Length: 195
Image (tube, rainbow, N blue to C red; front, side):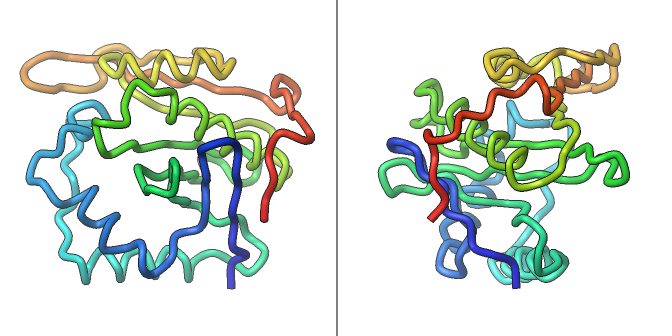
């Protein structure tokens, strides 16, 4: 069984997903046919259709794929006790200790408040502490201004731009990759705690 994670800093909590969270997460992610968050995330990739049952099965299968000592790959983001999104990681190249991270704040009422920046900062910091990573990356597209700014705010460097890689509503956009190396990341010791 994967170890539960519960990270807290001020009004932000990142924690492992519980069974009772799944109906709300399902509603936030799949509750609308064309959710506004998807317009910014990666609208050129269709959102995989799910029922609550298939979504629950998928989440349970994800947890079962993790080994006992592996860090949970997806956490909920709470602010003041309310679930507003998720953070995630996936391996880009496990042999070289390179993974990619992502974030989703699903309710637009929580956009522009710094929640995503603080949550992703906590997540990256935790992953560098918990795993022998060499680098962490973020992949986005050139129209996602919020993610481009967030990556820069976190001290990540733009490392690649693949021009005209994504077609969305008859226009082409670049695929943009950011990264940060372990030695570039500042690891404050006492700012965050895992309960």
